[in-house]
Length: 393
Image (cartoon, rainbow, N blue to C red; front, side, top):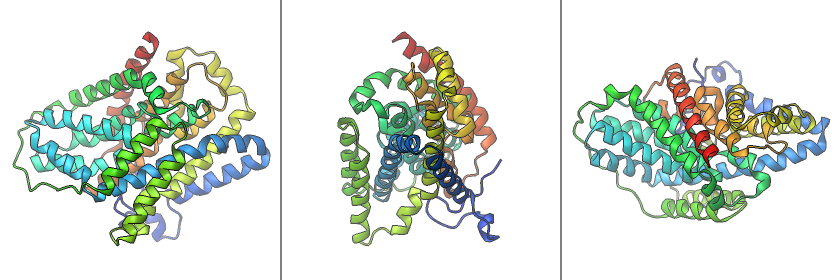
């Protein structure tokens, strides 16, 4: 399976054969489907569509702001410098992988999993190459660990905000509920990747090139401010989005950034398309009691499994809107399935598509089937570990 994308993560023309022949690419098709779905939902059930839109738009606005902040931080070479520093202090392939796991977990928790895969994938690939290591453990680990590490904070994953949007839970309270499950999910996922790629992690390292020197200024300040806003505010979407726009606006005014590149980093057609599909399914969930009735008969384990399967079938963002249209008896188990379940296959989350773009921009040719095979094992182990912690708590 392959996806033809119109641009790579750096905004350069990609392999969009559909565009060259006058046909819309996958992103444009998704935007059209989302617009049609949301429009149909608004016609059939105006009140339901309004309620679904009110639930769904803040998460999408938040991730847009975080992607813009990630763009500025990337331009300041914060990620690249961290990757080179990691490559320099790691004494072995195992050490580099362990450091990469920590970096992915932190960036995902703070700046969202989409930001993590978009900006860390090239950094981690180049870090492995600088040492002469095999890039596969960090390449596949980046997408699988980003999904698994997106449980910690509301802004770490859009599904967290969609499912618990009505609860208006501050980031600190959310963290207290999810931190143990988040930790075991990361450990379980990392262990699966490390075991599967153990031969690659044993290879000796080569010499390093000159380090990337970060700029400690606007990017770092924007990241720190975003963390504070997400942790303290019940509704951080609009402030974080404004912060991202402000940071990019400063860079544009300085002549160091182009508006077109910012739009490409956002991937607006994909965001708009997924928002439209989410609104359509959220409206359906309000008009149709079927999903709520199914969830009402499931225990904590079955809830996570059902959510994981649904995320792969329709993508985790629309699935979150559908399954949380009515109150769930096990909302955190629902999140475990929606956040980690996408590791089963590429259809599960937007992060997979961003990961493919970023990997190709770094000169890699990842195999979706290899990633899905590894991800399926990791998803089963991580979901079981995370739900077990929730059940014990």
